[in-house]
Amino acid sequence: MRAFYGLEDPVTGSLNAGLAKWMIGAGIAPKSYVVSQGTAIGRDGRVYITTEDDKIWVGGYTTTVLSGTAQI
Image (tube, rainbow, N blue to C red; front, side, top):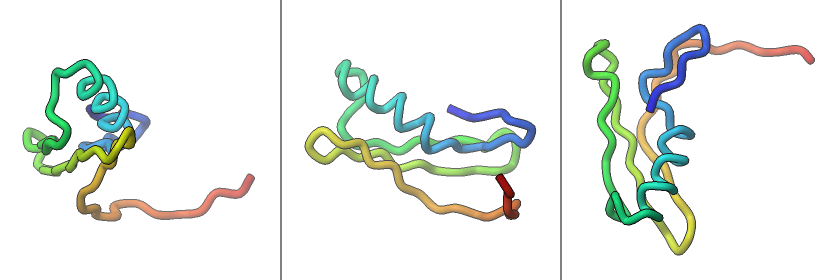
């Protein structure tokens, strides 16, 4: 799962969390697995999905490519 919102996010944890909730709940995926994304665009990433009770945990490593502040 990837998000496109001006800048491409090659690995999107929040989208993978939603997909994991559905896939694990439906018995399609195991309770823990690794997602590999971004390889084709040269930004290889891994998302580690695990479950604990009824919670989905998403982990991995990050690289900051853009930072800033917003005034509301």
